[in-house]
Image 1: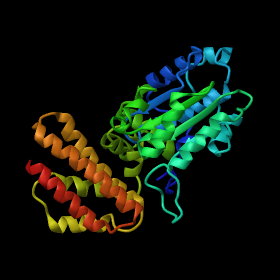
Image 2 (image 1 turned 60 degrees about the horizontal axis):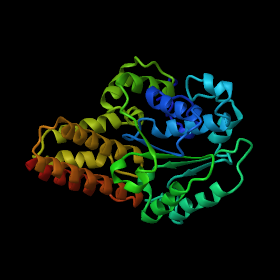
Image 3 (image 1 turned 60 degrees about the vertical axis):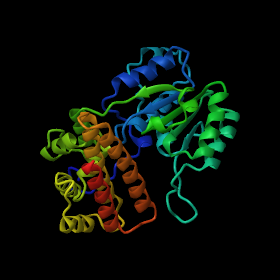
Image 4 (image 1 turned 180 degrees about the vertical axis):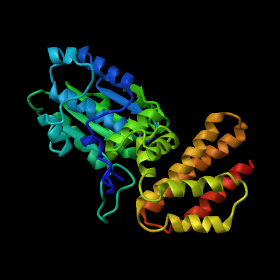
Amino acid sequence: MTADGDEFEMPPPRATPRLFGHAEAERALLDGYRSGRMPHAWLICGPRGIGKATLAYRAARFVLAHPDAAAPAVQAASSLAIDPDHAVARRVAAQGQNDLLVLERTVGDRGKLRQDIAADDVRRSVGFFGSSAGAGGWRIAIVDSVDELNAAGANALLKILEEPPERALLLLVSHAPGRILATIRSRCRVLNLRPLAPADVARAAAHVLEREPTDAEIVEAAELAEGSVARALGMLQGDVLAIRDQVIALLDRLPDTDPEALHALGDSIAGTDPQPLEAFRDSIEGWLSARLRKGTLAPSQMDRLAETWQQIGRATAEAEIFNLDRKPLVFSIFGHLADAARG
């Protein structure tokens, strides 16, 4: 909820002018640009919801607004920020900047979001980079996210990376860089972003909600969000915190399961609203991440949990894409978790 009590909608990264945390990563991009030897491709890695795409758009806006890296304004800049009222910022937010190509999943013929970034969309980048740029001469592509490329799309992107044109910049966002083709990784400057500190998460969430970062609900969500602003904001909508409590209570009982509680959880996330399903998935993924980070499990248990994590990701994605009944999903996932907990 906003300060006025209204439901909020998180602004997309293209329309998000502020970046919280990640000062070191921002400095790396800025220094690379004003050095005059800007790498043609950056792979911006890290967990979901921590600001990777926001940083990519921030870099794109700065370069398009300041096409001359040697200009005094660039050399004196302390960040990649530009005025939100700048013409470039307005055009990027409105998806009307001709020198910026964004590759992301699109809606298919059936009105559903595609599982992958279409290979044909990636191939469009060949014509994009081959055409004449604007006054500044830069052409920039953001891929959000490169993890969502299928084999054909990845190979099409690789061709661009292998022979990048002059004054081309590719900003690739990745939630799971280990799954990316090694040939793509090797052609990029890798920029690893860490999960945000709770204080930065609270400041970012408070900014979106027009509330104070010391608000008790915001502080609680920030502490539970595993460094993700998106996750914290999700918790602050509707019954997300209550769903998380249901999930954690069931996880704490593993390998035992409670069919009645599982039924109740299935009812809580039923319907077509994506937010409860995301809260369910994020709560489980956060629990799995914490277990794997502890390093106290036997290698075989860690392998089982990692495999279970992948199964959960696939199952929840299919449930969202194909609008499947969510109660069987709950029972299936907790069945996998119980098996993994038994080792």
